[in-house]
Length: 73
Image (tube, rainbow, N blue to C red; front, side):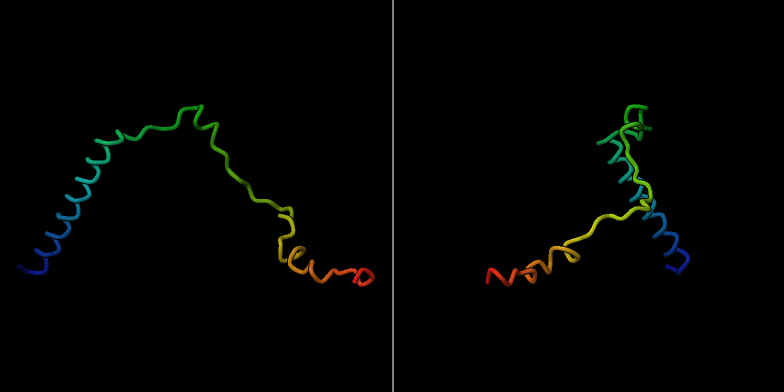
């Protein structure tokens, strides 16, 4: 087997495997269908937020044990 024959064989084998997988998926789930208007309206997309996302635990909660009132100790 020459290199060109090997390349053609492997390409055909890959295409056959892909086609078998596609047929199996279509047999289980059916063909793809577009969204209905109701489904499309349910999809929410986030936009870029230009505001602050809030301070995290590392900013305010991590060092709270240092805020001890010395008069009570």
